[in-house]
Amino acid sequence: MQRLNLRSHQSYLHSFRAAVQARLEKFYGQKLAHVTTREIARDQGQLLAYKGLDQVDRSPAGVIPSQKISVSPLELYGSKQMVLNGQFFTEHTVGGIATRLNKGATRVKFGQKFFIPPKKLAYEICASGYGHLLEISMGERHMFQLAFGIQQLAKEMGTAHWTDVLARQKMLIVPNEDGEQRTIDAFRKHSFFGFEPKNVMFVSSRFYPSLVLESGVLRFNESHRILHNHGIVPMQICMENEIFTVNPDTGEKTTVPRWKYRDVLSQMLNKISYNVEDLDFFRKPIDYRAIAITVQFALRGYRMVMQIVPQNQKDPQKGGMYGVDTDLSHPITAKRGRGVVIESFQLDLPPEKLADGSDNPEYVRALLDIGWINRNN
Image 1 (tube, one colour):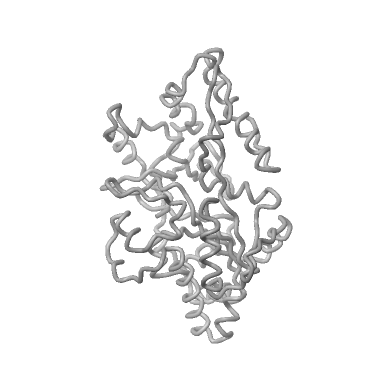
Image 2 (cartoon, helix red, strand yellow):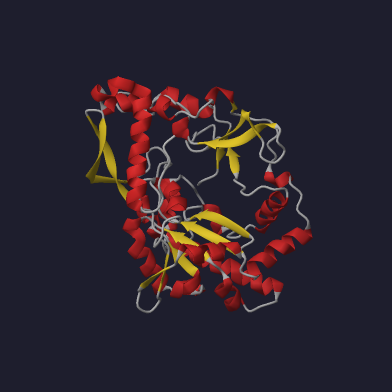
């Protein structure tokens, strides 16, 4: 398997192209020289399919609803203390490529979703009950809501002034590169929403040239650049000179070395990734019960907890399918059967659209076979 080289964007991009080339050569063999991109599109389900897909239980038994997990008052207190002490790191995803908008909704350039008013976003996802919100942008509301939640916590606990608690918080803001400057401008306009500027770090999702196939060989197409979605962000953090802070007065950027970012994370007890368009954030910006649950799992040896939800039977969504790979061993118990999250493009699904551009009913039925999906709304 071709490994990715994460020393720089250039090394990543060239190793990525080599990995795709190797996959195509393995799949098509000598026929690759005559293969067209249309044929690759036809075969992409098989090309990208999860290895051993037939041994994955798509609707696994034993999923425990989070509301049935017992959390003690002492554990809740510990979660709140974690935030008060500035040991709860938050990552705020601002960009993305808008693949989950409901049918018929007006297409939104989600690289700019930090700036979408709540009522507009509520319309896009067919939500209701948000028309009374102020017409400030989604990202601004998101950050104000976080600051307000921490202010309320400080008043409840009574151990420190809320401005001191805000100053302790550390976070990473993740816009797309085309929305980076506007996002920074919004932070400066609102005095970083009360947070300490040196503790607010940024890393922008990059756009890369697409790949085209010519006589069996892949080359870069600089005229068409695409986002590798937010999977690229953990890889970018491995590169040098990617994370930066911003001077609130001048707007000047200062690079945060990788070792310094790792040092910040080493001081944290928990880290969570938020989506700026998550409307539940309006009601509960910090879910202390959820923090307590993740700590419970951490004490049992788990390093990450992901929230999953049942597939929406009325409006099925694509995304990361949760299942149990019966051929893998559990990393903690060593028993056969390990939970995995498999992206929809790895599920060998039928085409999403028919030749005439209409929705493919077979694709919709295939989505309904997904019992559980990662929560990302």
